[in-house]
Length: 147
Image (cartoon, rainbow, N blue to C red; front, side, top):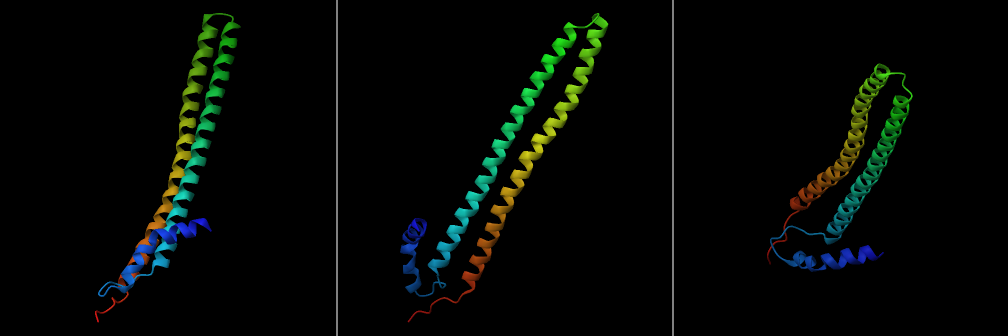
């Protein structure tokens, strides 16, 4: 796999640490594997955020379209009103419904963003935790003694 060669080549200079005295044991293959996992976690988080962004803007477009259709319907209803009192009542009803709908729509959009952010954060957080655990284990390995 091309990525494996890239990661192996990138960390090859670190192999020299294996031979140095008083340096904790170093496993470059483990570091390469952790780097791959970091990259994969970042890709997963980015994919979730990209999909959520697309979903967010698609829903925002749908909301705008529905609002435009509602406003057009209001204009038609006002045009067919019997008198100013009937027209004002229709406008008041529309305004009340529009405010309620706007609050619901904002809540829905906020939930889309929040869910995606939480999922992406969980992925990255899990990987960071794993990195610390691996680093702790690696640091606990005995250092090579000087000859």
